[in-house]
Image (tube, one colour):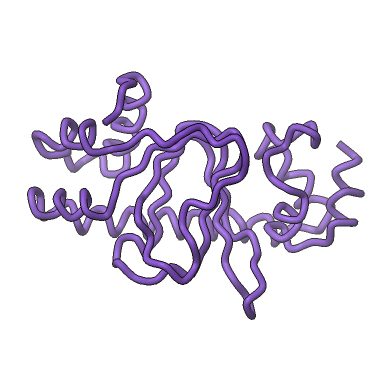
Length: 201
C-alpha cells in the first residue's frame, strides 16, 4: 500500500492526462492507492523484469531512471530510457507474454509497482480500462521508439550533445546512474565517440 498522497496525485494526473476526454471511473483511484506497492530505493542497479520471462509488474517511475534493453542477435542494447513521472508497462506485461526485453532500475531509482493480478482485477471491475491500458502501452512504446530514432537521425557528434541536453541529470559523468556502454548502445555509437563528443560539453 502507498503512503505518499502527493506523489500518488502526480501519478493520477499523469493517468488523467493520457485520455483527458475519458474520465477515470469512480473507485479506480482508491483501488490503485490500495493495490500499488512502493518498491525499495535501489542502492545499485536492479533488474526488475527479465527477458524471456512473463513480466510480473508494471512500474511508475517516481524518481531516477529505468532502462529497457532489447536484443539484436542475442546482443543487448539500450532501447529506451524512462525518466521520472513515466509509466513502464511493456506489451509483454499487458498481453501476458514472455518478455523480449530486460527492464532495469538504475542506482538511486524509486519505482512504484502494480502486479498483473491487480491489473486483471481492474479489467474485471472496469472492462473499458483494458483497451485504454493496452493503447497506453502502445503509445509509450511508439513514443520511446520515436525518441531514439530522432537521436539516431543526427550526426554522431550531435546525437551525443543532444542526448545530454535532454538528460541533464547524467552529467557530471561520475554521478551518472547509467553506464557509458548503455548510453553508447542507445545512441548506436562507439564508446570512444561517445566520450570524445561528450568532452566538448
